[in-house]
Image 1 (cartoon, helix red, strand yellow):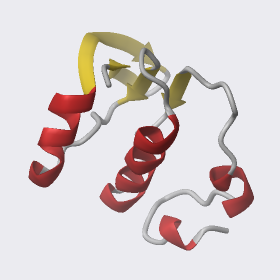
Image 2 (cartoon, helix red, strand yellow):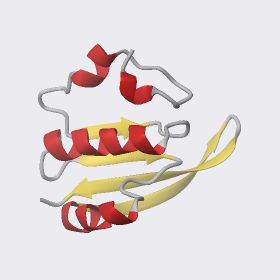
Image 3 (spheres, rainbow, N blue to C red):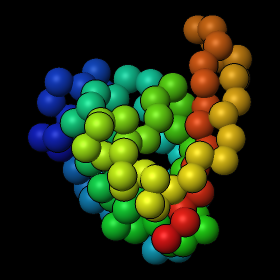
Length: 101
């Protein structure tokens, strides 16, 4: 498993995290249990690989929540929607972003 998952409640094989679909233009991040470090690494992969116009959907956690990351979000992404969704454990917020540049 990937070392970046230490401290997280989940464990993802590195081979799965390391591969990025060639033409992915929508990314879903079921981030309810991801820690700050895991989210930062996912954000880096999104910046590296998601094309302009691509969309990111996150569950529970927003992208770029660290103060030092706010400029990246403002320059590269726009939050285009936020929806309250009913889950088996209760309600959760779903955030939808669009890559601007």
